Length: 142
Image (cartoon, rainbow, N blue to C red; front, side):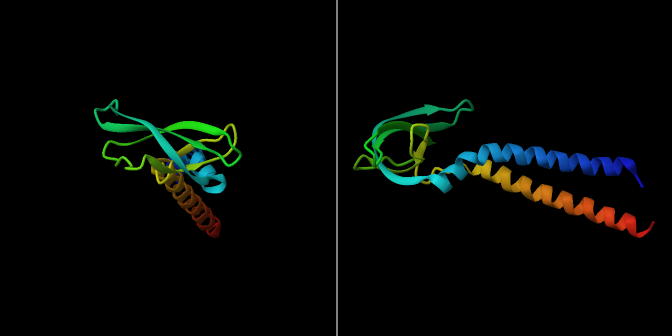
């Protein structure tokens, strides 16, 4: 057996586990919105167009809304520069209730974190299958 090859497979598995943990952190907010989020309507208070660090354009939308318990909240979200301004000044939002809750414009999902999470989940699953298969094959010939 080639020890270097075995070590390389284990390193790939650990890299997949690290990516899985990173994806878990990045997709935590999306899971929270999916499980505990509520839909609402907010009033746009201000929009500003600015540039990203890499020269791209984006728009920051500031809005406020009232939770069902009467608490008024203000928040903002960043969207692409070509995001259409609503003619009536209201936007659909997704929020998590409470003092520590967050909010975002409806449909403004972070696909990057979810992609890393599910991609790393696939990488870890493949790594476990490959290591398990190699272990069974090796035990067969002893």
